Image 1: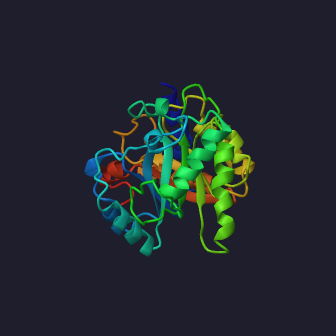
Image 2 (image 1 turned 90 degrees about the vertical axis):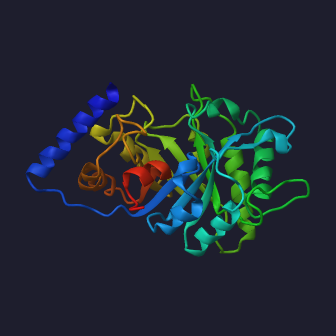
Image 3 (image 1 turned 120 degrees about the vertical axis):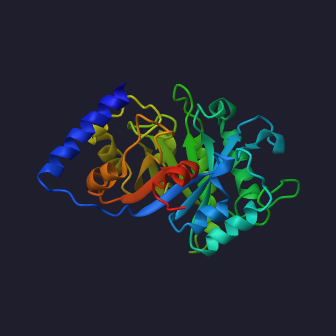
Length: 303
């Protein structure tokens, strides 16, 4: 497979450098983790109490874009986690200085989630922005339920993975969400992040990223993107150069069970990948997929 060939190419580069003693372990910087994809991963509070993560991304709001708006147009999928207690866990995490985001979309292969969301019109983008603000962020509106109670999330992650790379009105969504920051007056407001395919550019989010409103870009080194040749580090450099105002994160799987062909052993990550990734001035840290795989493999956390 192409991923296996890519991994071999990468390892040859790393081994040649290790042979001459030119590499040393390096710290990862900030660490973001996706939570909500497996009920056996433990609670959100437990994830934050590991001390391993600086950001936890709740995943996913998998259904949106339905015409006419209303609560029935939106679907939150936390893989069997009960909603009771999540709101208090969010506030607990925030009290520890951990950023808590909600990711919208999700991998197309994850239960067919990719078929359940779209933003075909500017109106659908406006409706989704309103729903996110009133149901999950700093707003409220009669008739709009808040799944996490009075807990207000810190922002929204765009994880758009549509078959065929069909572009939607995600730029309009980003502008409408970011507009709420005008009312925060210097306080942390709505943080926007994007989780993108490794190969540059990502057709689903190119227009949204062009707005310059995203604080971070998580570059996925997994998921079967056969166009991505990480042995040459070309895609990473292009992502960093294209969005100098955004911090770029290296996205990796935390266990081989998540993606055997894309999995990197810790030694290869710390002594190799990060050595190159941190050369760009806007390097931000690591994005981990996901909390469940990290818990069973102790890739980043020890618990």
